[in-house]
Amino acid sequence: MRFNGFPEIKESLIAGYLPATFMLAPMAMALREQGVPIKIVYLGHRDGTALMVNKGSDVLSVRDLRGKRVAVPNRFSNQYLLLLKALSDQGMTLKDIEMVEMPPPDMPASLYSKAVDAITSGEPFMAQTEMDGYGRVLYQAKDIWPNFISCVLVVSQKTIDEHPQWVQQLVDGIARSGMWLEGGMDHRMAAARAVATGYYNQDPRLLSFVLSKPPDRVRYNKLRLARDDFQQIADLAFKAGVLKRHMKFEEYADPRFSEQTVGAVQYDWAPPKPQS
Image (cartoon, rainbow, N blue to C red; front, side, top):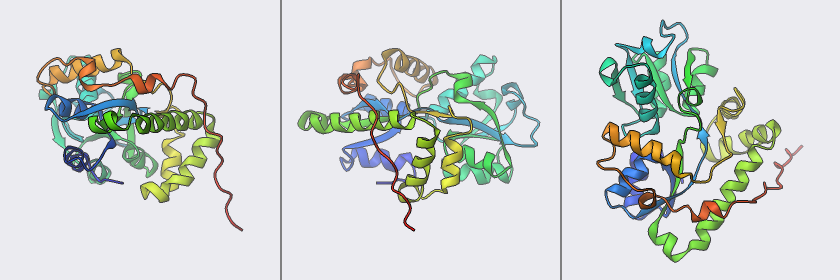
């Protein structure tokens, strides 16, 4: 199932309509804090986020964002925390910018029209502005937050309790798919062609751009749950007011499924040959 925004995903998860979904890590942690019976069981990818400005903009560093209008997906997003960290590293706070919340699909047009000075979200929307010639990367996630975690795989506690074998199969599949994607640029290009229209309703050229420029723009390895990674997110989320208290790792994460992926091997898969 494809959703257009995280609020719809959140409501479907709370209603029990979705037994499993990808969502933003801080949002998943906040839902768990609110009592929603879910657990994070795996990562979707690492990095895959950038902050974009107009190509001719005078914003050449994070410090130059002072007084500028910056769009983020929402305050429960990793991009919000990433922006906070980028500002904090330069001795700045949110008071130094004008932050607006905006659905990621609307961000490219807003940057193009200069309704905002900068935008940040997950791909492929950031790459779209760069590929179309009016966007420039101010920073990639890896520049500010090495091994940045974006989306996580969340599963309902009911599904974990009643069908743990399904959860393990899902996690194993994502692990092996990620290894296959990291198997070479030919794999990434094949994936872009295979899933662009069938799953994402995106131009294959855009997904090819995201997966290659640069090659580590999005990474699909090291997806097992690591306590230290999430502690960093939890600490920053608490500081930002996204979480109301310090949460223990075990409250929102169930690492046993990701631990079983040790020794997994990539899929032996090749894209179907085009028919003549």
